Amino acid sequence: MSRILTQIFSGIGSSGLGGIGGFPAAQIDEVSSDVSRATARADRATQKAIEAEQKFERLQIVTQAMWEILQERLEVTDEELESKIQEVDLRDGVADGKMGGEVAICGNCHRKTGVRHHRRCMYCGFELKARHVVER
Image (cartoon, rainbow, N blue to C red; front, side, top):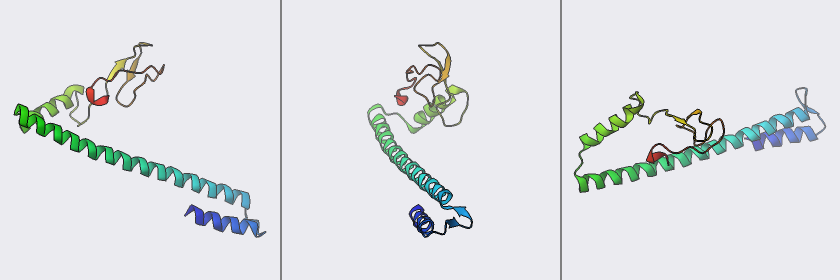
């Protein structure tokens, strides 16, 4: 769509009409450029979403395979797994299906910093240790 707008606007701008509806050709070019940038950002976001979905699907397969190995070798039951899932979920005090928003003390600046979404201290940039094996 941005290519179509660019073609329309550039054709009008070069025909000597000076723009559309009283808008200067430069302003039309700027809007067209904004549309192109927004389209590129949307394309990148779409690609990231596709990649995240692929990673998620792979993790589902790996998790199921590991669970089946545990069941076969250690005779762990579905009920035991469910119980452990609830236990891990409640470690942060909230039964929300998430690992929790833990706070860590930075090994460099010794300030409290969130570790859920960040691998580095938000104050000094020091790399934080993962608190759980699945965060590595």
